[in-house]
Image (cartoon, rainbow, N blue to C red):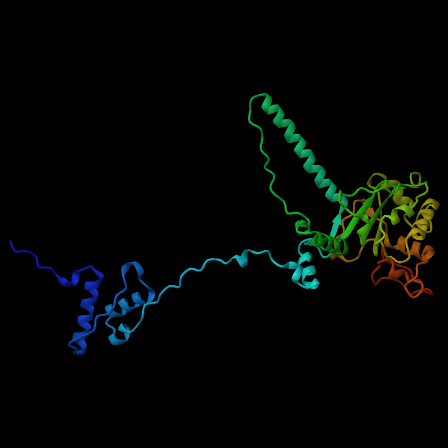
Length: 356
């Protein structure tokens, strides 16, 4: 039998295929001698060398130009210098940039008005503590019966504010805490009137708070018939500058209190004495606002069942209010009570609110 001839064009080697393609191109152009294209080693094949091989296989016309191309050498890997591992020089930045960084860490995000509500924080803490005690009690029973304890599956929740930056140094602790107390509003709800005791999360420094929202949960006249001493309460906030007082009805005594405070003209004398003493005890240098905010973007959450009507607060301040501005002039009612643009023509310096 005759042996099969070996077809040289069926070779799979890279070098032989390149030589055959080069000879074919040389025959087409009538050249007797063509320089062989330098091929890089297979272990270090570059992008340009692969392009050269494809061009040779496709019958590129300019073989001398291809032979003059140089192999691209990779740059050696540079190790990371020790300078990049040094801590970021935060204190070298201007104070404005540092305050901008603090605004993303120590200020409550997600709301137009950064509000830290004491009651909601205490409820979450109490909820976690109750769940922890229940889990420990169940694990103790399971261990006694020879079963494995239950592992905690609580998903990690993002903190309201991130105060870890204050642990870097003593100066950053002071600066970040100053921005924390100057930029956030602190909401406190009094549900034990006529006592002025308050319940807040541990760690709040009253002497550094500058913005306070105070909710007063009013009860019926029989339970409000006692003297309320406001002087010790306001003495706890020496740096307070902005104060918003929101009278509301206590959920337990709503049915009795709402009928006694339906209108200021027919209000019980105990409530008249209560508001008169409250306005007289507020320091003069504070920027005071009364009532619930009309801006829905501020998103204030109340602990009481319902806030006292705007018309009652308007009439109350028109009769009892004697606050003055920095120039010694009497303040208008609409400068203290947020009643929007819905009020009648002013009578002298005071107007009458027509919006509930």
